[in-house]
Image (cartoon, rainbow, N blue to C red):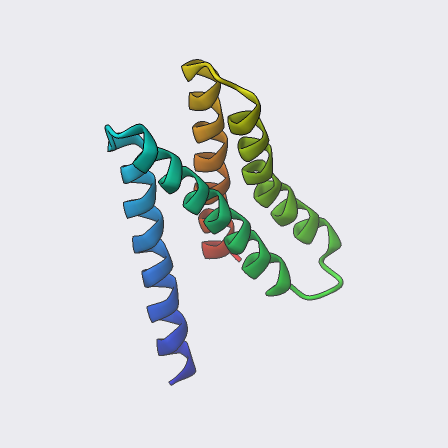
Length: 110
């Protein structure tokens, strides 16, 4: 019973990740892209928190790696806010993409 709920949770998280990252790059409107960027950045931090708290306390290195993957979303937000150029904003979107995709891979291979 409990494993079925975990599977539904993981499939739902995977769908949100794929749809969100797709919209992050396919949206034409700047305002909508900005909203999706912030949602995906928070989603990357949420995935990192779930992954890190799901590990035992003596897996310190694994927990640090997971938090570092989540920190990429924070770095992406900082780069996005501090820049006005499209190239820097694309770099911020790539950081958030790496954070979200890396977090899901880390969660899957946990």
